[in-house]
Length: 225
Image 1 (cartoon, rainbow, N blue to C red):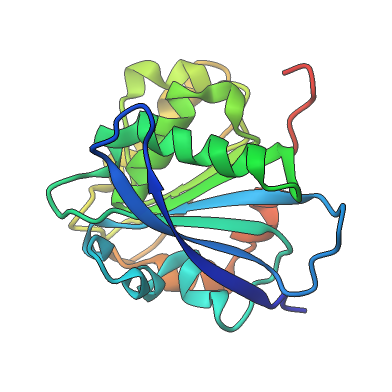
Image 2: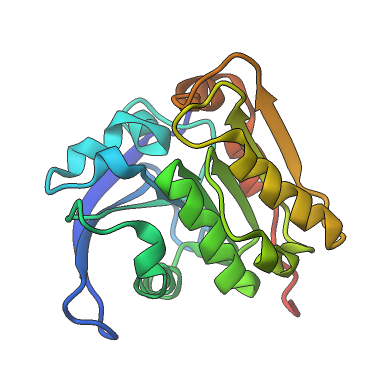
């Protein structure tokens, strides 16, 4: 059964760096109950969805399916970068400021269940956010993105699932494999799902034919973590 969502478009300006701003979609179940606690799912778009039209982020990933409903019950935060001169990994701290704002101000968020998903450029940001703020997240799913393997030891205990097409000629498969291998060498147990003969735009198949979203929200941090 799909959950139907209401969607609100909001603006955010960083208090730490006032020159940085963005707009975002905040989506909640239409039948959200007072006192109900739900996972906060953060989705980070790819390079092609940057701009001033918020509807551009509905081309792919979680936002694409919001209008028709999602197979999970959660609160969804989907920000959009205004400028094509900026990539997510250069504004990680400002992005974390936004995530904390929503987490702490929305009464229906389960603060022990904040999770990350992103594709391509957003996949890189998922890795970077998780390594920079490891204790903040319950689980992550980067899709066709990479990171800095020498820092991946920080993700040893974090539930991780990755997806990548082995025919990707935009983001090499090695970007995901290097991160996965580094986490495993540190003692972690990330899942790595390779899509054979699939190129960079693997996301539609991933969201429509896998349990990515139910898996993502199934994890909660322990309160003492």
